[in-house]
Length: 165
Image (tube, rainbow, N blue to C red; front, side, top):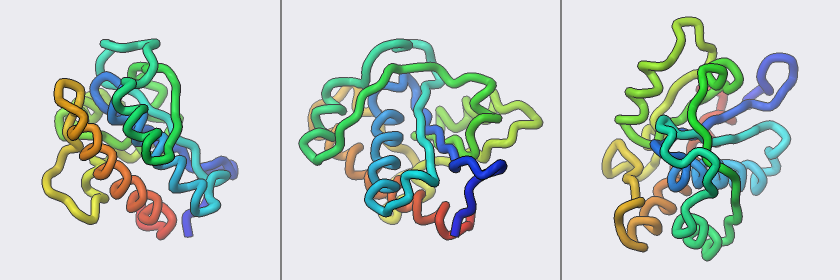
């Protein structure tokens, strides 16, 4: 079973996409939802950020929020950019796609303590490595992203609980 991080604090997980308005806030919300359903909400903290500053201070994309709301997930927040301190404050940084993973790894300080992962690495039904960006597409894209993020965050939580992180 996953032990809380150093000093008895919860394990901290940061989800990262490009603009922090579609995929990563959904990842944050879904991970929290799965932790709550499992009765593990005191053991984990989740947040989200973007690798770009396009949407700093903006709320999540309403299409993503609406898709999640229809499925019983409610979330809000404001977009922010990935910061150097995140590599030390979080135990796990989870990228939504390979492009953001490469950007995260390029920014990662040599002495960073956070482990960096690709979310789809935990997906039990992978049909690719990336969580596709639904921003420029239609409603079906948001449904597909929700399904992927739902499966992968549930599996990520199991992975962390199994202590295989």
